Each structure stands twice: as C-alpha cells, then as structure tokens.
Length: 329
Image 1 (cartoon, one colour):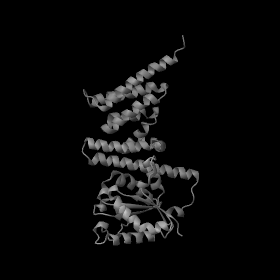
Image 2: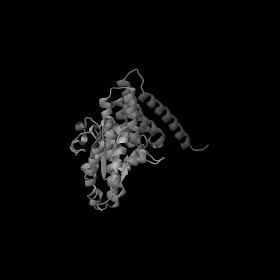
Image 3: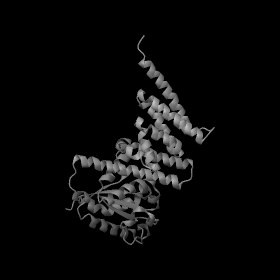
Image 4: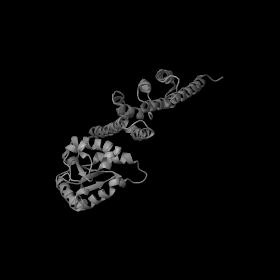
C-alpha cells in the first residue's frame, strides 16, 4: 500500500450536503485505509475548535477546498484556512485540490494556479448528472492517493525541527488572520458590522497568544496593520515594559480599532507588571493620552476612557506598593 492520506475538508457549512455527497464517493478509499477524512463536524465537545482545526490542517496530506460563492465569502475558509493550505502546498508538505461545487469567481482566488476538479472547470451542480461529476472527482483522488503521501517522503524530524515546524504553522495562521483583518478593514465601510468582524478576527488571534508569543518581537517590527494587531493580541495576555512604547505609538498613530486594543493592553499591564516598572508605565499612559488629546481635542473616545481607567488603577497600585514598602511602625 502507498500509505494512508490524511484528508482535510475546507468548506462552507452551507455546502455541508455536497461535502457529505463527495464523502460517499470516497468511501471505498476510506474503507481500504487509504484515506482518513476529517472536517470540523468531527470536533469533540469541550475542545477548542480553532486549536483542533489548526492541528488537523497542519497534519493533512490532502486538502480538499470545496469551492462555492459561500466558500469564497467566508473569512475563515477563504482567509485563514486558504492561507495556511496554500503555504503548505507551496512547501510541498501537502497536496491541495480545489473542487468546484457551484458557480463562482474562482479564477480570482489564490488557488486558481492549482488543478481544479472537475477538470472541465464545470461546477458539480451544473452537470446534468452531479453523480457523474462526483464519480470523476473520486477517480482523480483515487489516482492521487496511489502515490505515497507527502509526509512519508520526508525524513523524520528531530525535536528542534519539530518545534520550528510548529512555530512556522503558528506564524502562517497568525499571518492569515492578519490578512483577513486587513481585507475587512479595506473592503467594508466603517460600521458596527465591520467592527464586529474585526473583533472576531482579533479574538481568534488571542486564542493563539500562548503559541505565538515567540513571534512577538517579529510582529511588533512589522509594517502590516494586521500583524501589529496580532502583536497587541499577545500583549493583552502577556505584559512587558519593552513594548510599552510600541503600544503608546499605536494608540496615537493607528486606526481606532488597533489603538483601542493597544489601550486595553496597556490597561492590562497595570495589573500584570511589577511595581518597579510603574514609572515607565505612567509615562507611556501620559504620552498616549496627550497624543490623543492633540489628535481629537475636546472629545472623548474608547481609547481615552481606557487610558483614564488605567491611570486611576496605576495610581491605586502605586499607593499600595508604597504602603507595602514602608517599615512597620
């Protein structure tokens, strides 16, 4: 046997019925042990879905991109999963196969350079017999899986290589989130809906704060707004005096959403930092507040409110530290 291929389905939930139909045609390969299929409905209750998806996408040998207008419209499928999948295909760590389910502008996508199935580039749902289309797709996947999976062609990794590879995967996912954020910011008009979408991306970045911490220095030096936001997501969980200037700079120079979360990270620093850094923190808060007053004089904003809270909390923490430092009477 050539080996078992781990298959990852990237698809929109609106196309779940078509995904199930394709799985039926691949069932003989699954029963033979040539395929092990995975998709997000297999996540067990209680597990963090993003972490599970990241692991499965990072270990997949064959990534099936089930393409439709809904797939292309999904920030997660077309954004995060697509970025990671294409990077793994580029690195020859996996094979990527787009499967055209429904009519859409697939030629404008990142994966247009990959061989599309069905080969006629005719959407499955446009065939007189969708069953014939699925059968042809299954034949093509059958041919692919007669070869050894990409992972089996590479030498075993030592522990250091494994850590590097894992960090590379985290970097790919963080950069994918950054690009999704930037697309939302550029393509949507300012609105509550846009803010909600950006917040969703930020929350996803934040779930990776532990794993992405080694990338913090790299992200803070980036010119990309999305990558700066990723750095802020880490600093809302881990505080360091080294990055107070970075946060202050974002508060005064970046767009309100990034500046708002930079202020939140600075507020978090008040509770997380040692008292010996309070003077640096006070200076950073004052600089950011002054810069905002110049930028939007006479008005208040979310950033100002947060900084005012941070200043009040810092004053209280400083007083408590002073009392603790006094010798007992």
